[in-house]
Length: 508
Image (cartoon, rainbow, N blue to C red; front, top):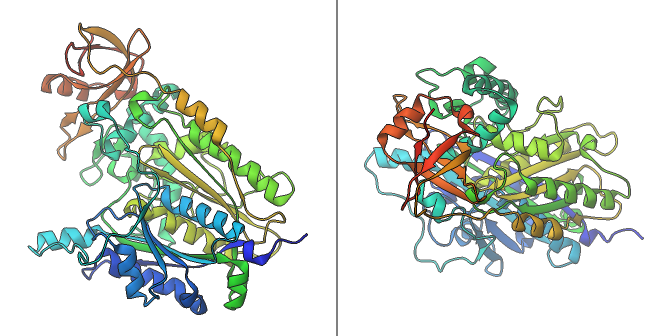
């Protein structure tokens, strides 16, 4: 029996906007992208059931969804909500909307997000007051996973910023491959250079400039080492003013609005969460959650299609790329070669397209749908979008197609795999009564603008199997760490001090 069009979820319109010159706030920029999306489906404006705004990093008021709804002149009955933190959120929102449409509980929804960090910094530099949005509105309801991204161990070791945590993962990957920091940088330059080529052709990219592997990997005054082994050109760029919006609706709603020819079909979606705290992960260089979500995603896509669907059936991919470690871990988990000729991004990736806070994946989905919509019309073409939040922690994946799946949208089930992932967490020690030798699991060195070592966190495993997140005992340890090859420290030993989570280098 054919699927009821009221229960077939599609992405029917999207909009993207960026601002390089004027001072804007997130809501005004988000209004631009939403208006662009609605311009492609004007008859859906008055049929929107819900507006969801992806969490905005810059302070933007308690009711950004309500502000957006008012700016778009939507009716008072439209539901408004904002989300919790996480770059996985946009894909999770699409998966949730598709599930609700397939159940018959939703018809049309607008998903939007924005960051205006460039404008925020410019205001501060000009001595202007912060634009904090409207404070006269009641706070919008909050949806999403609000569990913290770090625990007491990470807090004690100052492992809080992505730019300081993702290099820990990279040290594991480099050590596993037997590479020193310089060799790993060269490999990462080759990995990321194709991303810049895509960004160079993308009118929405913040840095539309192709770069060679050497330009990405070679440290220089304008490409300093931020955190070993990453140069600045390997890290997500958070200083942009960018926004994106999606209109997700039923195929029936798209037909009533006369825009069914724009429909990109949501085939399947899945989510999973890695062990929450980095210090508790048995292998910080691997993502069992992406593996589990990927398996569920393709199993559900196969169910939707009535035939096997695997990674080789995809035509386009956008792999979340805040840092190279995220790309490598996702590729391994999903069975994708790093040099896959299909390419790993349709936008250019977060270091080159731009990394507008939690909203990058909205851009990724919008671009993926454009690529599918504008591609050749011969047969079914499929695309994959992935998003992650915190520190390779929360994951959401989706498969999109140019034709409706015969069995309709299917949501992947990761319940069993999630229980196994949660159970794999390694016990953590807070402090020791006496000094102990521990094995380095992962480490990095943060560097100041002048190249001076400024921090050197370590995740180490004690003889009894417990792990600890550790900070250096003093500046001397930091300086010594700064002179060593980071991947070469993985598998080596440090001495954990008694009474606080601090370490010293073991005798060599």
